[in-house]
Length: 137
Image (tube, rainbow, N blue to C red):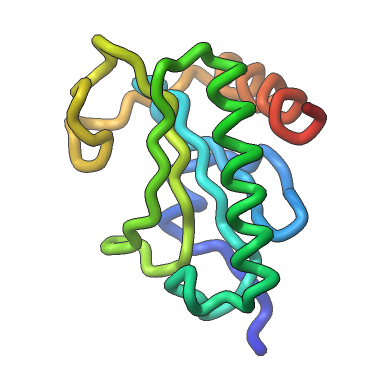
């Protein structure tokens, strides 16, 4: 089995928040939406059904934990969860906080406009706040 390595496209668009039991937790560098990504630390896995039953259970648990923490942290009225993988084949699950009036509401976040990166200081503070909200909550 190959050593786990994060897809370079995910690495380029995100910053690491931390590690849960199964997944690396990433923050998308796009200030239009609070957007987290869970990446199971398993090599050569592209679909949820490729995971072992135990890993599937862990992914479900970690996705729910992350979604609840993100909703509480942001006060979002809706949390979108999706695992598309059309451009980045590595299995990863998006958890996005949404609210009426945000960019492209009620449409999807994928493929809409250009990403608006956080300022470095804001990104660092948000990352630290999310560590507390998700990993310590």
